[in-house]
Length: 208
Image (cartoon, rainbow, N blue to C red; front, side, top):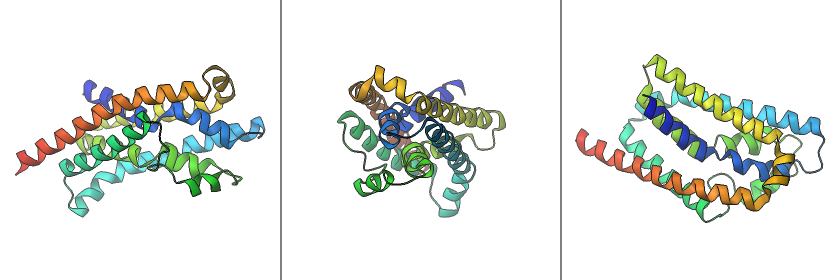
């Protein structure tokens, strides 16, 4: 159980990319007051947490209703995570999180907490796929599922803390430093994504 939860924490942390929120949050809140930044950070983290918890609670049931096996979703989710990893390693604009028009719209919005911060940047497709992959395995195991939700809460807490500390962190790391950390995380995510795909293929053959 411990190994499974550690693996989930690593994958979820890398997919959410709290470090990448630093330059993003700095750009979206440039020139804003400290009160506004604190408010947006708190709302974004809270809304992202609600989205993730709801997905963890109903995601597995939705797969059952749609007739999608967990092995099939592992393959699909692993493929999605691998594409996200490639974007991280090569420092490409993440089309899996937002498009250029969406980013442009976000810069003119008064409230950036729901869009684009909570969704799709924090609770994006990769994060939700990771949650669903793990929650399906832990469904019905009360202790493990509670610990799983605790990890989700902890990562959201990290996101909130980093957004609050953005002005200081930008002076330390800068955009280049954040990109370096993102690339290193992408390499780890790529390996874990391949493992998801391998496990999904193995599970599909065993089931048949």
